[in-house]
Image (cartoon, rainbow, N blue to C red; front, top):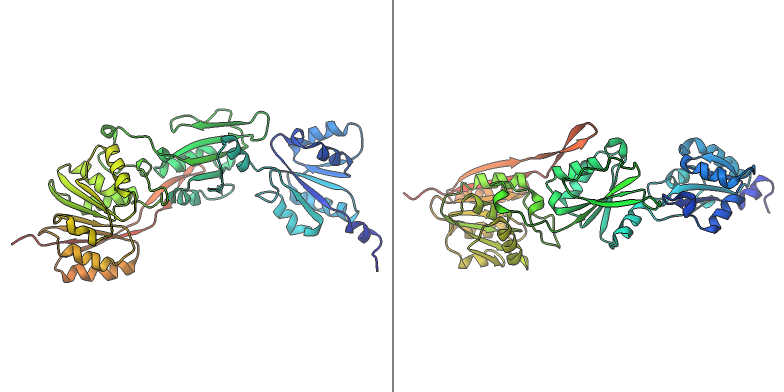
Length: 431
């Protein structure tokens, strides 16, 4: 049986939720301009109401309402739908992407809502750069703690769009977190303002460039991974280089020893002026190459199983002005057979049988030698510590837990790095 009255009118009534870009009404197609003029009710942000008033002229319809506080608007929308009125709600970008769509779906029947997204600020930013964005990720700081951004940066994404919160510092907050992460050299910093508006602006800022004095509140930041510029070795600190200075494996850009851990490992190695240092599971070569900056007389042998490791570690060595004796691409312990016996050994990386690897190292370690093993799990510590003790080495265990300061409003929030256990064994000196 067919319904009658308000129910019959509700059956065909829809709320058209129309996305706009920063150009507002001027960016809408002629079809939607006409639909808005024919509507009974149009809700829009206050910044668009003046344009709508001009369009409407002296006509009583459509009724215009501000949508800046959508919670207060909901009762009127519900009445309009129940009365079968033609309703259009203007929103920014895609209403279902950090927009009003979520709230509408919570309070209105989904079958009464029809969404028409415009390009988001994220899409517009990549379009202006002319860069494909299928490998990009994004993160929002709106009303959120900045810690997830610091954690996401440690994974070294190829491209990261940051939706800023002007109330918490906006682009300045993002820049502060990037600097605190030591990754300024590893990312291009792009600032997009009013994207989609005739007065839009997209510019790249160098680390020392000030933010625009007329920075628009409607802005986002794009962080695009880039090969860091070659530093002047003489201008670098003696050790503890920033993470962003190192060239990375493109398929696993975040897998390297972080600066705070690197400093501790260099200390635990008790580096002699001369001798042989094995860096097993060398990754990008960060620990071994910094060891050479401290002790140029050491003979460094770096071993890494990843294809292309020799070229990458060689490139990082050239950037730092040091030269390892050799870099081997291969699996340890088999690759160790060609190396001279070591005075110092760092066993990094993961995977494989670390117990068998440690046994091979202990069979070659010279008297007074030191082996240092960074570990991510207590299970690894439980497996390898007895092995060192049974071999007669003096054993020391350290846990490194570092935090990096990140801007938070007018203060600083400490963002934690993953804790690392360091197992050190020292071989007795010759009698």
